[in-house]
Length: 256
Image (tube, rainbow, N blue to C red; front, side):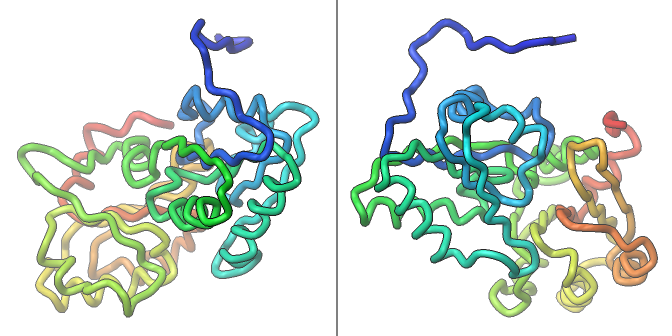
């Protein structure tokens, strides 16, 4: 059992006053933090974090750090422009700022928008990648997003807006489909997938609170997804996998 952590001996980057680091915190398990993210937590004066960042991760911040929750759940809380301006204001006041996001900042995390806003104001920034829930979270559910006997490609898509993605093209274009932020619309997404030609009995897994001790996995099919969601009432955050890789859970489930 590890009682304390120490960095390997090497010259670690310094989070300078007036700069912002945009870091991914991974899907939830504190052990999936990168060393660069942990280094940032140890230096930041202020941490601007999403609601998806687990409390155990925030507990690793230096004791004097200010924590600002700007989490957006279901369209609530701070707007993206508000967050951009907050980062700019904090940095221009001389703070060492860590923008901490669940998963990876560049995978449906709007990290590129925030970095662009910082660039426009000549504020130095650094990107620290994290493990995305669509890969790491599914791995904790025993679901590989690629398997040489099943698929050689995978599609990652957000499901909060039914109008923007071409769901028919997505249904036809990949064997494995991973959906972020799609829990609320999964019933309609399933209908669109079936209309586009996907098998009604195709397996679906809905992984909630992935990689944490609260993780749950609901296995269903495209035709039964809407009814099973209504019955089980799974809670966000959730990542959804559609395709035969879900069936590999029978052998690959390991996390209890």
